[in-house]
Amino acid sequence: MPDRAIILYDGLCPLCTASVRRLRRLDWRHRLAFADVRDAAAQAAHPGIDPARALERMHLVPPDGGPVLDGFHAVRWIAGRVPLLWPLWPLLWLPGASRVGVPLYDAVARNRFVFARCEGECHPGHAHDRGRGGGGA
Image 1 (cartoon, rainbow, N blue to C red):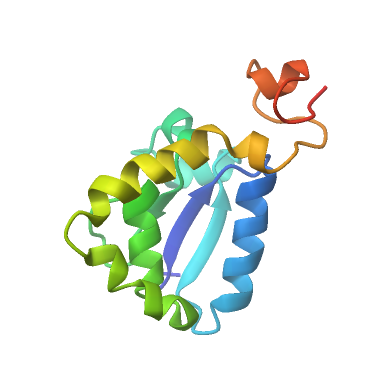
Image 2: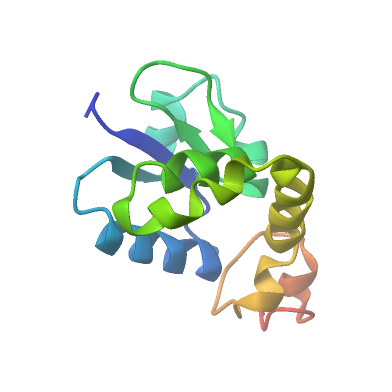
């Protein structure tokens, strides 16, 4: 799959998996491949990516061997390659977009189990697993 970017995401996160499903539907040009960062094979295939950090933010491995992108910067890369997201792409490059986009992405990522309820196992040791903020056990 060298012509596809690889998106590493948290496969136990309901918001993350819903986003992957949407992106799969929108990616008719087949620019994206997806891997659950919790999967040992995905970790072995990308030894330079810290799995703990990849659980905090989506990571994107570009097909051209460029630097790994994460969070907002990965979203911006995706928006430039998925046709239905093209209208967003120029907005994500406006002056100051990173200053707003990075903390916004991080806030959503930190609170993703509040936005999407967790059914069953999620991140061990986090508040949503103790019955707060996400409906975990």
